[in-house]
Image (cartoon, rainbow over all chains, first blue to last red; front, side):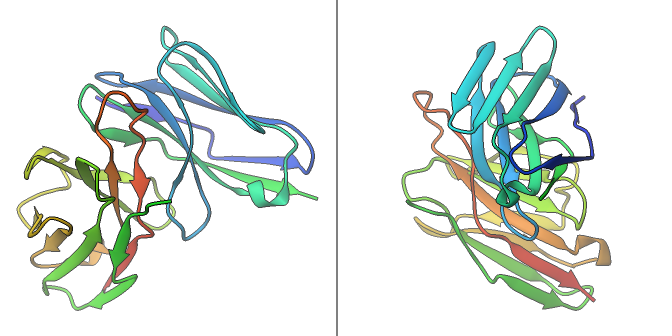
Length: 109
Length: 116
């Protein structure tokens, strides 16, 4: 079966750093993706990991450990506009992307 | 940047009616998808489409659903006899499908379907 877990909600302060964790158990693995979704809008791509390690992209970094079935998204220098849901998604052996439940991040002034 | 476009943005229908949701994927992409998201819930996979046929579908995608690529640009989702529980945001997505890229999904802005 396919199972992806994320914390439901997180709160952080403007300017701070926040780490959003994702654990997965899927029938296959062909990459892990992080998407940002503002309320009422479509998900937009943030990052992609297929090999173990850290991928850095400006204020956003994503880490993957395939042996542990674990990833995290790190957001630095938080801004108010970062308040959104963050979706962890795994692509299985085919072209199917399975999404986690999302983590709703609230950034407070 | 190229984008996936969906129409209409909102669709209201009566239970039992048929609806067709329309999408224009990014032109050089090879894989097309429909996802849905019930309010407050996670994004759920419905179906993927490649080379003019369904490549994978979920348990949600039962006989009342069908997809079609009627021409070289459009990709449609038809729901034959809508139920109240079909009310959701429906997202179309496409991906390049070539192994040389990270093959991320590009999402359209969605169609909010309300079944009354």
